[in-house]
Image (cartoon, rainbow, N blue to C red):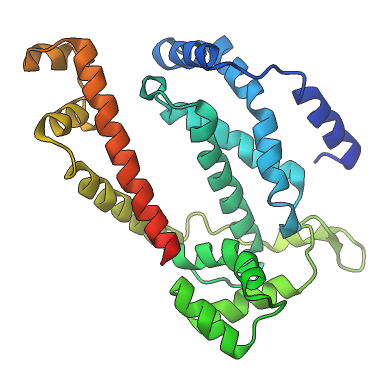
Length: 281
């Protein structure tokens, strides 16, 4: 565990890594994806460590160690690299930010589960949006009436709102604070690991089914040619190369790539609209 001095030194050190330009990032990402070039991997990771710290600063109000948040965020970078496709044309930082936030939020949510919090995507969404909602309503704590308003907005029960707010009204604490007469235990010793619980397995399955449903709907917005290219290049097992698809469709590999990129943008636009509507609802 880093102390404040160690963490400050770490932040100063990672600032020495240069920020990658668009072309350089594309070249390195391609080397990693196509050849497993570890030097390219290390350069991409090191150049995005400051992004992790910046995002971790945004979650400082939850009373958890910033070093732990940074560690989870660094795992997020590695997950992002496993799935990132440089041919799409988007910056890696845009893609990586989603994974970094997801890992940090999972860590925070699980760490706060000493007090029972409702399960499900809606409850997790409530957890990370309650402060913003309270600020918008101009309130410091949630009353029975306010709880009903928030519950309706977030599509959760009033009890879930009150439990989450009650948790927030207590002073934030670190899970490493010593407890007990001898101070030889900490709060984190009493955190139950729910990763393999039936509840979380069911939640993961629910999340998977939801994403599959949204993807299926997004695919239906494509033309037949776009649908065929995306399925062959991204979804089939095993997938086909651009050249193989081009030969089957009697077009050039470059044209296949253009069709795939256009189709992917349509899918991404649809998924974002669904997520935006869900947040707005």
